[in-house]
Length: 145
Image 1 (cartoon, rainbow, N blue to C red):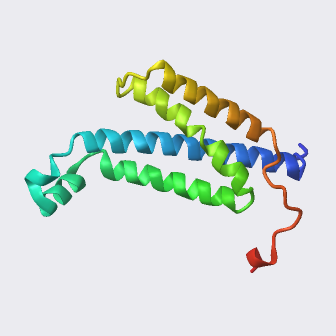
Image 2 (cartoon, helix red, strand yellow):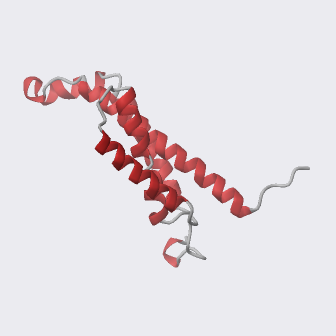
Image 3 (cartoon, rainbow, N blue to C red):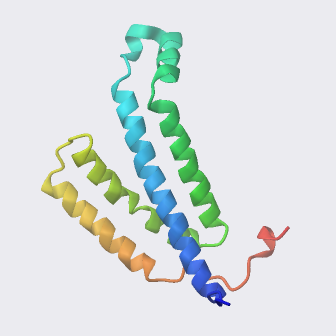
């Protein structure tokens, strides 16, 4: 029989999986929304009903919104066991993925100054990721059912 890992090890693995889901869903959801919105007509030319029809018919907007919903659910799940001050900085690594997608998929020119900003984000995420995901011993009374 294979022994399961200690609860603390399982929590680290679960946290890493949910952070990865949040990061990639955020990045790819935003990519899909950007592609979709770049294909939209000028709002002033089509009016509200026409614009809404274009939104619904756009093959990127609704799927992009669904992927963003996955991001939201993953982040909400993380909040249920990890500190806000851990989750948000770790999920900020989506900025790195989004910048890479912007340059290589959307072919946006990402200049040195932006890459330096991305490196600062990487450093911040690396620092936060080395800390415990939950610094509270017990859930507060507010969170208990």
